[in-house]
Image 1 (cartoon, rainbow, N blue to C red):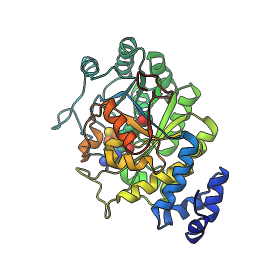
Image 2 (image 1 turned 30 degrees about the vertical axis):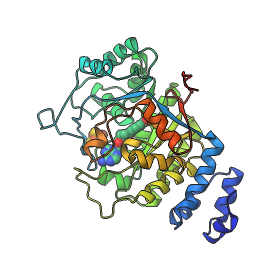
Image 3 (image 1 turned 90 degrees about the vertical axis):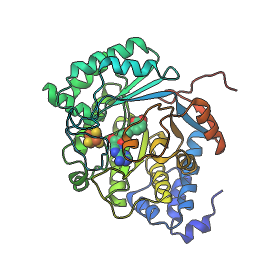
Length: 368
Ligand code: V47
Ligand code: SF4
């Protein structure tokens, strides 16, 4: 039971009432939460909501992340992963055989293949169609969650076709789902500074809506803790919430704290751990129509992801196996986790681990 007087003292009595009644929070409620000096009070509200939605379950998936190239025409200022061209030191581009080889060497057969890359200047759509078809044939049980909306826009432009047609062709080749990357912060004045060359908010949201219309579920993200304000974060969450009201195709939201190492984007004051947790909690509270909030342990660290489960998150992502985007930017987490490590970490903070597929259907396992 939450203490009404505590919330009254914090000026959050109306927010408390709305949360208790399951009513939608307004943007000014969101501002009041960001302004609240007591991060635990915000976390308790989010915990109440996540418990109402998911009980004591905390989810994870046996997955494999694959990055097919880091060569990218976009040059986002926050991105430590990107290389300008194939010749630059550290640049890589996987062949179809390399992708298959990585999967064959994965410690467990993946339920989900999460494949993304930079916007390579020449890789044609046919390369991705053929790769998906091979993956579909070899891993019939895996959900192919591949290519951000930004990559879809890039493939479409290279091929001279619409993004809808691009999605249709990839779906025919085996694509099941889009990951949530590339959303960053939607406000144009922020995009201009951090990712001026890539899809704007309208294009990112339109591609997700097109995917939803084709029956493809998608995830969504927000990159926070750089030059944006709390108003920009709330505007971002509101745009996602409005699309979800219309299309209902988002499965999971992933709040990504900005990692600063090797990045051209310099910031004055890095996020504190509590800033991260508060933003995760506010995401849970504002996104009342998105079923799941992911504590992506790679970017958060495992310890902070555990704390995030108490601040509104209900998912731990997965085994991952190999990760490059966060690690190029200074992520200190390991490359992958095993099923039993995930189980142990989730149990360690008082939740019941549930292995899931990409749509959050529980997987029946031998575990009791
Ligand atoms: O789009 C890039 C972000 C994203 C940095 O859909 C950075 O299930 C922090 O979207 N610091 C890729 N973040 C990761 C992503 C994702 C991860 C896990 C699961 C899912 C899902 C999606 O990483 C990029 C960008 O927003 N990013 N650089 C950085 N320095
Ligand atoms: Fe390219 Fe993505 Fe990095 Fe931007 S964030 S430079 S689109 S790889």
